Image 1 (cartoon, each protein chain N blue to C red):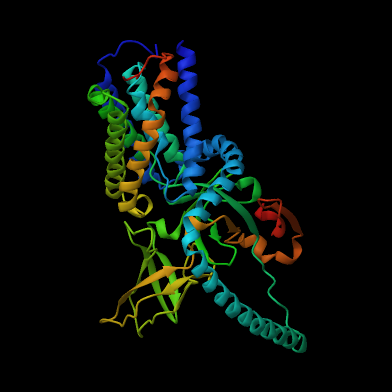
Image 2 (cartoon, chains in turn orange, cyan; image 1 turned 90 degrees about the horizontal axis):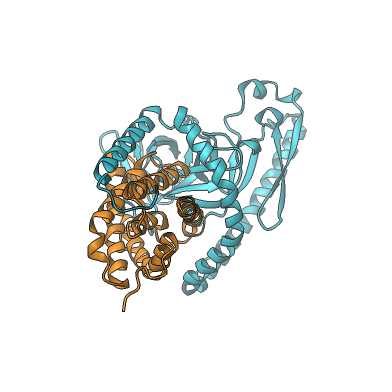
Length: 167
Length: 309
């Protein structure tokens, strides 16, 4: 049980990182932040909160290590977003649409934090390119992806076919 | 256990992870990307890059198709503009070939020896990106080392290698670098700096000339300076897009780089600076032919001094 859940989460993170840095690294218009979204959606599962935070931190750290920005920047932001997701998930679990909007709002918060902390640490040129369009497009794309994949992801991680089923 | 009832240890875990994250950022700033941080980057790239390379084979056609769809509206205008540019470039090429022939003739007449110190080049595919940084499919195994300059296939400056693993490397474009680039505009030396929070449409940088003697005009080419420690001299960087006159002894203007890093598919990594020892004894060192495979089965053969390895 434990091993299988860890395996599913690990594989999902690796796939998200690879897709994020290849496909979505190339596209200019459709640019969700899949790795951040995993941290958000994990909050909806029955995975322990510490594990959710650890996964968010590690996946952010991997993105930092693959890019050229400060190591720890995304790790801190993804962890913060995951923590807020854990604390607010009850308000989102009303339906597919509310979950998607909740994920979009948290993504917006994450994008703003990346820009803010990046600027404080002198990374504005690196993370601030096209800041306005990033603040609009990334949350919108994550809303769409969350609407499509959130229930499936939660069912897969929890091995519960009834999870996130709404009338 | 990974799954169980929600515990209330979220806050202490969160704070601990935040502290670790801030410490990591501080270490990275203090070490300037070197030391343990550099090793961590290389190690992660070495693990992930094979998967990225495989994904790139599947993803590139999709990305190209989607890019084409998003650009289809402006294709006709682009086509006309490119046809005009091609005609100009062909005319310039003929002129250059004439000059080259004259130069060769003069060298023969005066029995001059050419320098012949060609820089080793590694052609690489762009397989991904994170923020503004590009990930390429060549690494230390192909002679790509941290700090080496990167240009596009036209010879325009892109940036430098930020980190390199065995089979991949990360490129930091000049448009995303914190460090200023020492450049030459006309006969004046200036510093090209990035403009934070630039828009996607206007890829622009600021040029500061602190000992300005004459104005700079729209269309003036900006080249890398011999004073730069990161690039060989004379590489084209961009062009001035705003007239500016000296105020007191300095001037500031706007430069548009020739290269848009997001549109790149191939890059060329230069083996520069050349090893001082090997450069001094260049004639005695046998050159090694390196076969570099480019995507879609195209193959380029480049010549690299053996020591650049």
